[in-house]
Length: 181
Image (cartoon, rainbow, N blue to C red; front, side):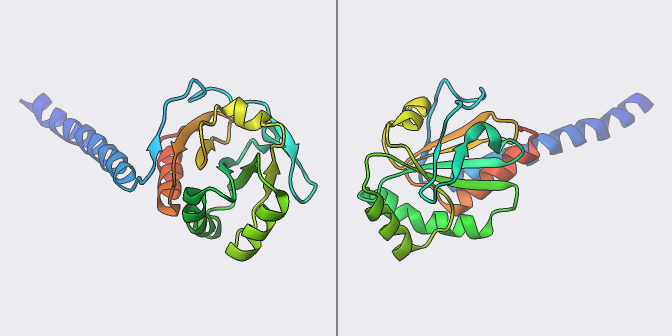
């Protein structure tokens, strides 16, 4: 009888942990206006890509280790990209220091992109993808598309369509709590 009394609290604790995990998963899933999409890259090392930002700085994804990296593929003529942008501004303003946001641009006019950011905010780096090398490496189907890479360099999430600041923050928080790094 005493073994059952000791086992009861352990079982209750285990059930509570599982329930908390499910609540986090459902909370993240309920806030999604975009869709996650399977990719052979998920839970594998991120592609080794490099380029230059619009400000002339070197961008080398492999050197971003130690930070959560959010890559948002964008085009200034894309209507969903335009609707999503205020959410990225909110995310950028509220993110923690261990999260880096980058916009990846290909097949767009630099002056149009610069004008869009000047008019709509956003002070994070804009990365050139003039040859589509980065888009191809990630298998980007259409913009907007957003990828999250863990501090250890693993691709951990892919969103197709618009994202929200809440979705990005909650996803990174859940992934951090789940020790996916």
